[in-house]
Amino acid sequence: MRQLNVVMYLPANMADWEAGYATAELVTGRFLRPDVNVNFQTAGATAASIRTMGGMTVVPDTTVDQLDPDGMDLLILPGAEGWENLQRHATVLELAKTLSARNIPVAAICGATEALAASGMLNQVEHTSNALEVIAQSPGYSGHEFYRDKFAVVGSNTITAGSWAPVEFAYRIFEILDVMTPEALESWYSFWGERRGDAIFALMAAVQATGSRETV
Image (cartoon, rainbow, N blue to C red; front, side, top):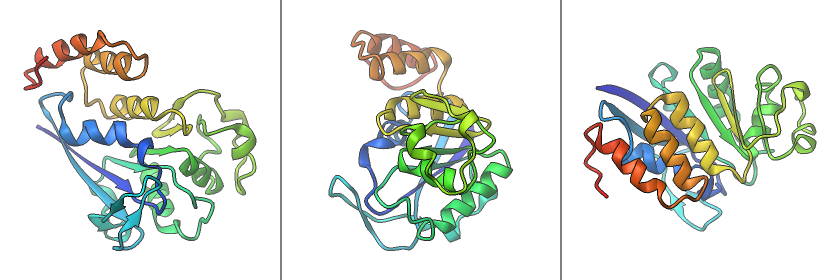
């Protein structure tokens, strides 16, 4: 059994929908390879609960300063109002730098990509964001030549996505972690990303072939 430890940061005013596609599959495991087990945790800057943009109150499992980088396989940074306050998120941005230096994936979407840019983490890797015109205003950013006008981009071990691309964001996360078979991954994207209703049957067939308990 391959054990993966995934942590999602909980910023105040978090955009609920931006990481939901990814976390739902990682937590339920319903379409994952049968030999993969994901331990999912949330971490806050403090132990206090946060209020999301959708009005939900979420209590973190732990705090960022309690995390062990050596025991992590992925850090997810969802978008939120307030990412421009780098000091507020200094601890998790330092963690992101540490993970990146160790080739451990960091996945950021929407405003979190702008925070990575301001921290200098996107200056030498292919990336995307909400718009080049927006991210170019981030202090410390000089990665213009590496910007790609795409929904989601994998540059080295850094995943970035625009606010409108939660499905593509999840797809790249599943891809880099190799938690789905190729057949299941492509069928999953066809269903959620291309809105092909019939793809659910291909997805179910793909996971049933690996021994999943999911049924049509």
